[in-house]
Image 1 (cartoon, rainbow over the protein chains, first blue to last red):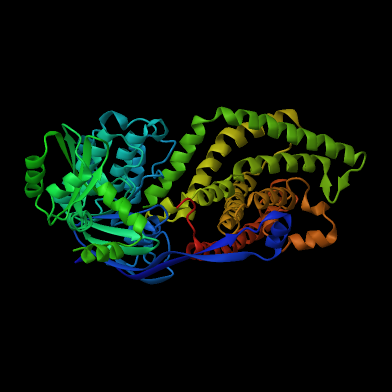
Image 2: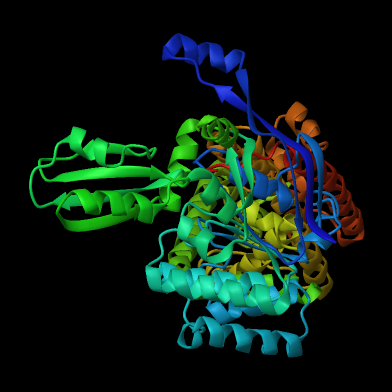
Length: 343
Length: 264
């Protein structure tokens, strides 16, 4: 069964235009002008149960708007959504009992009361039996290492402590789908790792479907088997992370440090029939870029055979760079086309 | 589920209790207000026995009781809701399987209970010692008044919720909230009993919910409205309570459609 099924989803906002100056303000008083902003433009995707899917994109690409429609907060302008078999913005109360949501930038715990009291309140709100509640809470507390935080008021928690509590709060009613909107924002590497490990285990043991948005690609690398990339309200990539990497990184770079000055012409002649590109950095260092088609050992052997080398470094393009490149170029399709046109 | 709503009352009550020192000054402020009105009215009465059917003794009691009732039913639900909408945290409320407005109402009630026990009751004792207030002797009046006070709270909270929800439609409803506060204090009869209003305004008030908040209950409490007619007052309050549910639901529904969560 599909956990999330979205078809031609669109969300349009009316944004008030503020005209400039005093006369503009006066005119605004009587006749407001609005501009339509389309945050999400007819996107479709499906997520099967038990999948961890990363939802990435630049700021303002429409990630949060999508999450808010999927969780029933926003009503879509057009298109169909089914999450867990429900249409989120209808049957809201029934629907939300089956999902968990964490917004990294907003707290859902009650500020003034103790953590455990917040949990108790949520237990009543979600109608969880005392027995199930105890069992789950003990398990979550142990795994996320919350033991001595439970009696503190929420306002006295650090960000990392709070975020772990938010996770527990979103899981007390054992939801089958978990939505995470930038769950690791502003957290240190220890807490980040703890949260990632926890999510991974939970997905494996309970089959919880997870959809997460993030700007931290390490989250994606650690967790997601699938990535959906959004740009300007449209999906520009939907598929595996490995695929994305191999499609996108066109090659690797090798930096050589030579014992003596070596001219560009000489280097070119060394690797002559191979499709590599040389760039000289200074007298003694040069970089060789080689596409995946070219065998590394082959290229290396030619260089090593022809010049005395002090040091070699190999650079693999990392996900950050790939994603930055996609964001800048706008669509993955265009870039992919460019790649295939290369011999 | 009901126990969750009751918990919201309990938690708000305990939170208020934690900040109770803030409210001690409130008792003094209310006492000063009542004193100022008492001396003002005394001057206005001069040697007249009654004005608009109120004797000075009745007027004193009316003022004391109205202000003390206000201590109970007053709350900041309008501001709380407007803030939730403005900073976008209202979004969090939609992912929970409960009714946001009902939760707000419960929190307001928790606050009301706190104000009743730690503000209204001690305040009334102080006022009775200082000013010539005559409280009714008939326990039936007290009982009826307690019921009316609950409706006062409900109607006032409904008006607050309506005002707060306007934050969905305007960028800043601060002005509207201030206007509402003045309007409720004036038209509910806390500042001046409605019997003193000019004829046209007094008859307009018949068609508005404000008088059901303070004026009508206080009139029963001070004995101006006989107990036999109190049932009519309670009925009128109940009608307003039901009528006000309609615009709240309409605004809430349409706000859902145009909800624009601020801050992404």
